[in-house]
Amino acid sequence: EPEVTQTPSHQVTQMGQEVILRCVPISNHLYFYWYRQILGQKVEFLVSFYNNEISEKSEIFDDQFSVERPDGSNFTLKIRSTKLEDSAMYFCASTYTNYGYTFGSGTRLTVV
Amino acid sequence: GQQVMQIPQYQHVQEGEDFTTYCNSSTTLSNIQWYKQRPGGHPVFLIQLVKSGEVKKQKRLTFQFGEAKKNSSLHITATQTTDVGTYFCAGLGSSNTGKLIFGQGTTLQVKP
Image 1 (cartoon, rainbow over the protein chains, first blue to last red):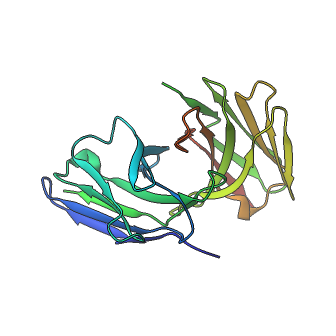
Image 2 (tube, rainbow over the protein chains, first blue to last red):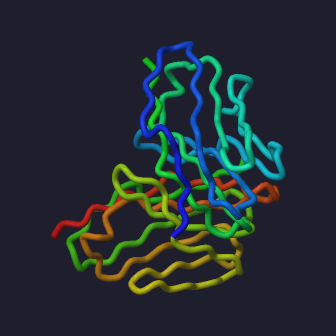
């Protein structure tokens, strides 16, 4: 069964550093998303991406965040200057038609 | 903003007992999706409900969507230890970006 692949699985970074989280969505999917989950809490929407542009972003997705699909397959989330409160599990998800989303296994980001 | 509430937060049952989790949205939903997240894992799509009053079954799992398309439930009959995990409902809002709004989840523990 096709999978969404995320790398790295765990990233530790110092506060103020930039991080890039990488995702390879399922190849024929059209809609791409980033969600995050703080430990023990619900899954929160960050941003949706369609047709090579952001279609919606949440209040969490401020100027420190950006997304790119640099080569037509990879889908990246960049956090320019990490804060302690950015520590969370970040999930990439993709879907073809908004019916059922396939989530990646996540990147656990720890900001120290 | 649009909110999805889910209860209970935790449920401990004896193996063989039934389990139900309930989901309520502050607004009418286009559809509702259910996901299961095993401890340390990522959300895995279970099912999507679209029509008012819809009921769907997957083996021991029964999913319902309310008549007003604002509430939903998941019922598991005769729980097994493999049912352990957190069950999330996620509403697809009115925007056409595919943004999912997740409930807080219900964590199910099953005692053998």
